[in-house]
Image (cartoon, rainbow, N blue to C red; front, side, top):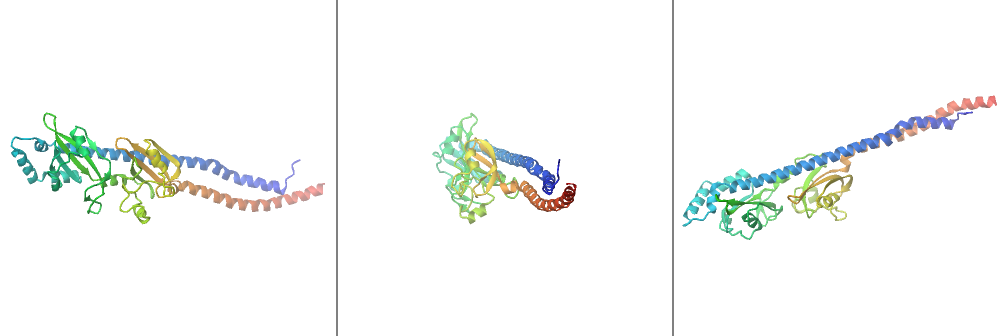
Length: 354
């Protein structure tokens, strides 16, 4: 025969109260967390792919700019030899008069334009001091004179060029693109080289908004950042960089000195993500997606802090646990009180019946 008691009633009240909370914590919360995780990774993936597309398109435009200059008939004439050399001198004088190179420089928005003949002698340049110099030993010239397009990696400049503050500085991140100049017979007459304004690439990488802590950036095969971090000022305060993130900051975990998980996987030439979080170059746990660009030897990294990415679901978890604890205390008190109120008369009647 079932004999209701205070303890049995208390247990019944506890089960009745905690069952919905247990279902929410053990079923609803994991489903919500997994859905949010997939959404965040999808957003990071979209951002990384979009940035890779923008960088590729921008590089193609830079190459197209160099090709447009090379295809200009005046440039071809300057490269051709004449019997007396008088025609070339007149052409160069004319080009200088109309400020043709200045126009190209302003129109394309590049740092520098260099046009050399087949022997590597600079005939036209946005930097007047380069005119007449020999660049025949430079790799960018040799590649172009062989008929191929040349795209350098992002490297520190070996000459003073304008930095972010408008001042001339050696070591500023720079990049060169060279293309051959061909005459009407399709013979190579020289080469056009342009120095790209790498700061435009920073603008491309920073035009994606991934919350307060999210960012996208480029790295090279050695794990060095090629574009600016959105946390540059913090890195300067920590004395981890002097002037800029690009080419100064190796993307490593500051605690171990080892390249972050995202970088290690990316430079292997793969694409992927890690949704459980890893330490980034600030020592902060982040969610990351990486995409390798084999044509340029660069990797695009998209990351966001774990706390921000999973903030909403963490709040839901904390809310559930808070409600769980609060209700537990209240239910235990109420169950004990009502269990006593209900079971006492039953025990009394049971005693009388016996």
